[in-house]
Amino acid sequence: MGRRQVVRRGSLDPVFEGSNPSAPAISGNRGPGSRGPGFNVLDDPNMPTGFGELKVFSGSAHPDLAREIADVLGVTPGQARLRRFPDTETSFQIDENIRGTDVFIVQPTCANGSVSVDQHLMELMIMTDAFRRSSAARITAVVPYYGYARQDRKDKPRVPISAKLVANVLSAAGINRVLTMDLHKAQIQGFFDIPVDHLFAAPVIIEYLSRLDSPNLTMVAPDAGGAERARAYAKRLDAELAVIDKRRSDDGTAEVMNVIGDVEGRTCIIQDDIVDTAGTITKAAIALQKNGAARVLACAVHGVLSGQAIERIDKSPIDKMIVTNTIPQSKAAAACSKIVVLSVARLLGQAIKSIHEETSVSSLFV
Image (cartoon, rainbow, N blue to C red; front, side, top):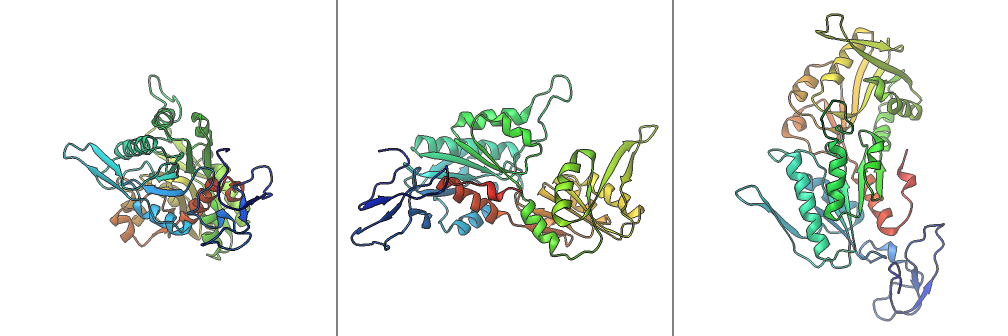
């Protein structure tokens, strides 16, 4: 039998789903437990397709997001034990049979409390090895935030391209596919020799921004490199576009933020993919305020919020700092009244369902 064919009692009826059909529907008399004629195995996420039953597991980086995704899919999170030895080595054991299953490991490679980016990356590789050796049919790494993405080129002599190295080690560990979101540079997909599904959080953020009902809206790119992304948001929101031109002063001691575009009396939304220490985004907000902006908001997909980021946002003219839950937020971030966290669990869940069913994920792209 072909790998993608499911064997059950009864006849197999073809399903016409374009050039990339999923597993066949099942009809006919199937004895006790039959769900009626015309029942499709894909109606139940627990029923196997060509790669077996869908399983969602989580590392320690973001278990809350993994549970949200499992709820969206209507499945129970996979049973496994992940712990650390006193010398900080990672121990992982799967507590259920996953032979022939379609495994999705939810693990953003970010820091979380005292656990570093590197530790979470190592966790992902150890988990992958365990699933590979336990005969999982396919292993997909769900990496909403791809750590080391900003080290994607040699911008100085004798430095590594760490984003490429991470792609190499994930592939070597045995991962068959990667599902990620808003890479710092889309070209990072080319660092992988395995399929990469690159999602965008824009639908989630744009839906929230459209409900604000703010007049005279202007999307602002915090630098020239983010202009294309801000333009895409502006088009969807029917907004104007402005760009911050960041330059050093003549003596090189300070940054001068020049605003390109009309922002006077307008509601300005600074859009970026990552907000880390929040230095650039808060300076941009001050520049917009000085140029007459009526209100300043900011949005970013990945809220790293390290160092003095929370303090800077609190003291800045930014009314709201909108991020998604690709990265778990600290207690300080949760306590900050300016920070709004949007969930991307449904978007990731829909992508996982499409990957599992071998259907197109194009509808999820902006």
